[in-house]
Length: 342
Image 1 (cartoon, one colour):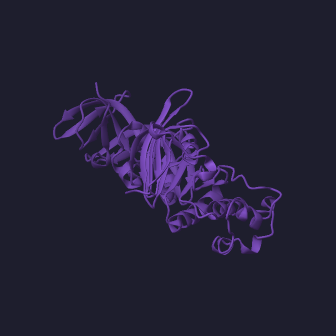
Image 2 (image 1 turned 45 degrees about the vertical axis):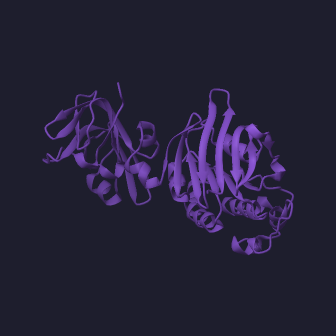
Image 3 (image 1 turned 120 degrees about the vertical axis):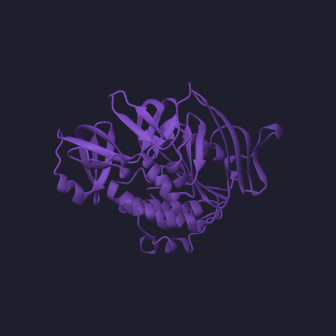
């Protein structure tokens, strides 16, 4: 039996948050847009928001509306890392970590690389150091459940990349049920064993990050995982399915669909060229270059309705500028189709 089981119903302004979730000794990330109910779910688990339903941890009920059980926050064994870390500015690093009932900083300061900063105040720390202090404080009471609300959103882009991998290791080492909420799929995929997509209070899909990329349940999940989504009308064409785009261009896939559908293509599956290659195994979409964005040793280029992610060497060889015409090409076998129903 899983140590943490949720079956929550929380009334919100525009919809009801209704989530059922089982979390073992693993990290589960919930990713979704602002207002989807992510933070509300964490607060309900911690007892900071009124909820109906059931929450059980290690076979102990924290919430059971049918039986009249609702433990107050102080009786729930929760470690909560807030979005802004919520450190006490007047306390030292050591005092922040030790704050709370039966909290101990022994070993945690060393483990989190904070021993040399034990007497420093939060204002003297970098963003990554403040995050480590917040996580150490959350673990200092040896909680049954760990909750993190947008743990990387307060960091600049450079620090975020550096801290993401570090946080992944720390969370895996903690060995307890952990729920992370974020609006960024890359953060979720790096930190979690499983990722759930939460939209308007409901989980659209949950699974390993690779599963969501390989087989998104719907166009929203596909977009959230970073895919290009092309809408059109699908029909069989020989042994393939052909999707007619509003622009008049046609995209072919080895998947099967009919009627209104979307093609899902990931940026790393798209290549660019000045003119269409003579290759019948590929789809070709022509358009103007709308943007060119370097990201590390890769470059993201927007051509018409598609974003391609190519190497810096390829971008330099193509010598593209915004406004130039280019052709985005991708294989039929790399094009997933999702039907939109009647």
